[in-house]
Image 1 (cartoon, protein in one colour):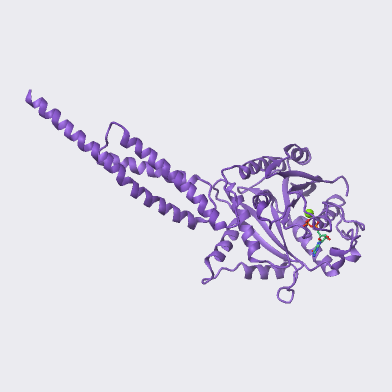
Image 2 (cartoon, helix red, strand yellow):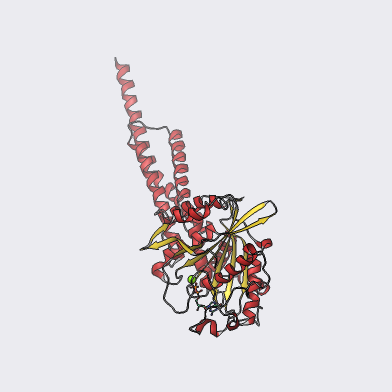
Length: 430
Ligand code: GDP
Ligand code: MG
């Protein structure tokens, strides 16, 4: 591959997240790149499922289309060794992180100058102990990319959706409240699709399968409904592509280096369709943040702020039971709001002055508003329904607590009344 190599820009070492800002800037700040609009294609999913292998073909196409400017026979014009991000047989796991291809592909679409960037992710998604790391990688790469490819093996299953929900919840929290959906395009990619008799290979079969799978119906369990609503609310576009098996030689032959004649024809045909649907000039998706197309140089700032936000302690670590996490984060937010209410109300009761009934009620309302604001501003997992439930609970708490403070203020009022009456009587006497 001409002058390209994989650069590790995000590393996770001992559960610490590190962004290699210098390395990132050394690529994106190049004068011929930094002022271009940017397309970011990323792939994520469980390890040893052919992600890096696939990216090798992406690179082959990108070189043909945007460097040599001739994409005819792009697949064949690459030799017997598939180069690019390292891909291999075996089952040892790579270290967790995000890799970027150092070569950025350039395309001019009329007046529009575009740069194309490829990201590969490493890490498992099914090991509980690294759940936070996985969520971090998935969330970060989904936030940064204009297309996130979710690579799944053999069939789409409920736990793939649950993982997706968990990862995207995590990413959603890194964003401030915004009128825009947090993510752009999600491309489900099902490898070794086994049910071609139900849904045929390719984008059309994928769409039919996905529409059916993500369907929300009246009598569906509310958990299944919730996952589906959440996923649809996160992405502007969701597509699905069903890939055939590449043939046994690809997975088992020791000296397989990417020789095309060892790959099944059906796989190659659909590989071409998939690549064209993602990387051909007319299908490129420019990265949009908060409704605006952004430039390559600006992307560095987003990388920095997302890594910072996702690594901050404010975000509750994801655990396997999403419900538990959602409950926990809401409980924390609720008790913080409660504490604030108690401390502010105590100040009123402890002060030497007392308030009239009217002023007390006014003050109470002001403090409640302040506490609800604090509750709303805390980052929480889960959807709006759980937030609603906890907000109701918080209001009930305020109602229970207020009677104690009201009593305190009433006592003060009463004694001040007695006192002023005594003063009045004493004054009258003289
Ligand atoms: P990654 O960990 O997901 O990046 O996986 P790799 O790209 O390193 O590939 C792991 C193994 O899967 C390699 O031996 C590939 O030859 C093989 N492979 C690539 N594509 C496919 C596919 O579509 N199906 C199957 N079953 N194996 C594949
Ligand atoms: Mg890989």
